[in-house]
Length: 102
Image 1 (tube, rainbow, N blue to C red):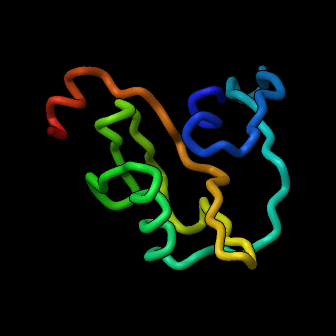
Image 2: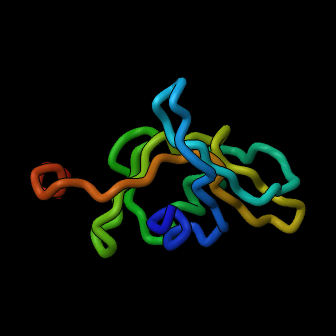
């Protein structure tokens, strides 16, 4: 969550761990808006310093951070034109992964 909030600044929180599903349960503040066009999500992700490596997959060399599942359905665009991440996966890739992308 710290990595996600550091990149997207959206206040995501870890609520707990689901034993039944063996997964994390998280929450984010509610954002009213609509699913943006792909061009808007791509523009947003580029503006925060990521380079597209494949469809839905982005890497920031400066931060050594990758995001995946960055499809329009995982973003919300507000009436004021802001784009907000709601369900992308963010991680710190291994050195081997970085070398493959460089």
